[in-house]
Length: 52
Image 1 (tube, rainbow, N blue to C red):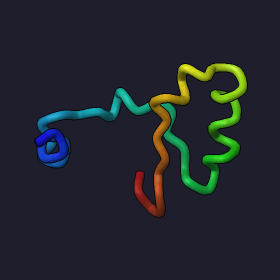
Image 2: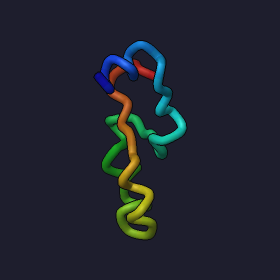
Image 3: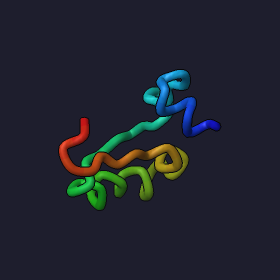
Image 4: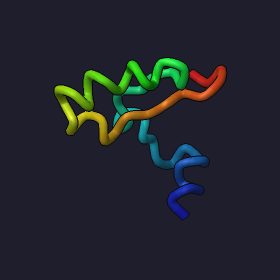
């Protein structure tokens, strides 16, 4: 049910997932959060392929 709400656009979680990094940059992208601000890595998103 929640997946359907997300896919239909009823729920917008774009402001919840932050930071968002490209897959190829994910190892370096997560380092600042894991080292200094662990609480921010919980909501980290990863972009795969050509998605923006």
